Image (cartoon, rainbow, N blue to C red; front, side, top):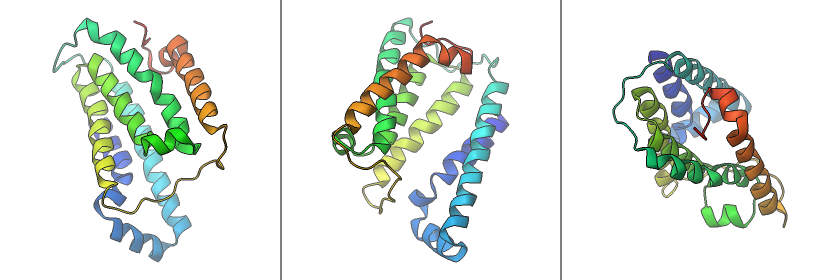
Length: 190
């Protein structure tokens, strides 16, 4: 569990600098230069992500539960995930979806984390998905009072929404039909 927590601190911490210290972030990036700052940010985030995977994988057999999810929440959790991948793609494909949602990646992260918390009551799952849910909610709230940094994205196109929906549903189908089991050892279909 320690490795997972360190990974979460590195990954979510690097993604939180602009939330908690935007002026410091700007000064540090100006001092270092934008490219070295982004390199340091990326290395920290990747190291955190690797530790999250390693830490979570090492605690998969931890069966200590905080709650036992009702069986009836399995189908709603699977259905809640339908919009996650289209929203993720819409983050980088400017169109009506991105305009309507505002922050599709944060919304996708919240829905992904919530869906997993509905069906996973083990402490390790609550720590992992709960941390992502809290971070996404805090980041979304912080968008109201801080300057948003532009994300790299595809050029605007009338096809971007269609690409996001079709591509996202394709990725969702792949996860549903085997990729989730292959990657994480658990089938979302039970």
